[in-house]
Length: 149
Image (cartoon, one colour):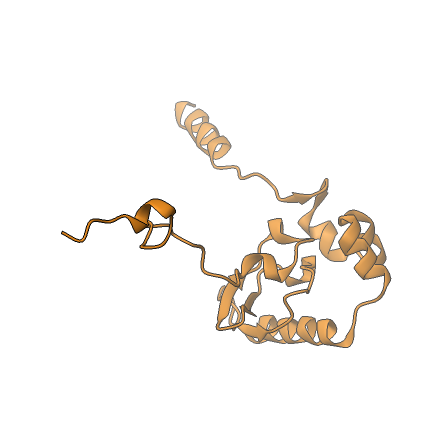
């Protein structure tokens, strides 16, 4: 009896939070069509869906499907490289690995459920953030008056 209670308590501890996107679980999200998904995403993405998915974005989704299908069981799919930074992440892409071009290299991005409705570009930064050091010569007017020994 004590073991059963301990097992139940341990099992209760191990339950994970189910992923939902705006109140809809992942399995239901995957079943949605483009029109239903368009009603869930933010306004900018909704406008993009209403204007239609273009050939390049459909080709990327097709390549991602192929990579997922060819991946061995319980293995991550192959990286699919793309320049389509303006591609909106749809539920079908979850679990795929995309190489997003940032102008120099392809950054590998693993698509997770929380990324749905965002752009691929948001996960591949195009610039190197500045780490400010000490000011150099000529940085301010006071730096002109350095005594020359």
